[in-house]
Length: 193
Image 1 (tube, rainbow, N blue to C red):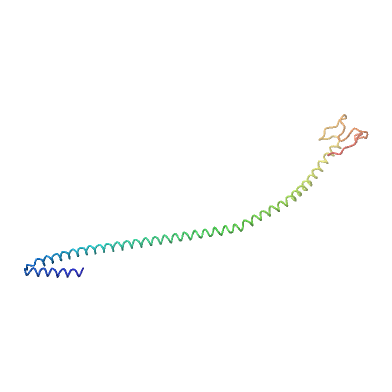
Image 2 (image 1 turned 90 degrees about the horizontal axis):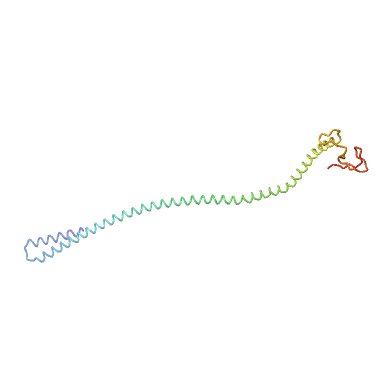
């Protein structure tokens, strides 16, 4: 562009110098004018091209700046995603450890429960035997008391629990037979219960 301006100036000076002589060579003048017009058109086109180049460069710089900003945002998002993935991986690892501990502990607990159940199953008959023996011991004491009460009732003249005996009804435990019962009749006494 700087070279074009001096050439145009020289051409104009030649045209002016030729015009000052007032020569009849109009053709030279016309060529100089055409050349000057073409040079001006080229200068105008070059100025437009330069303007477009500057505009394109500006847009390129702006788009590059936007791309860099987007890249920074994407990198930030990527780091956030990586941090989230790391956090989830840590949670997954903790859950895996917990499951491994549970897998180790569950069979031990199940074996302990089975062993306790087996011991209880073995002890159950012994507990039943101890209870029966204890109940028999208690029932002997109460049986002794009942037996004593019944003996007193049977030997007393005035029974409190049993109805009085009449002469028509044979005594309890006596059978009419040839042998004599304790009340004077004949019979064999049958033991109670």
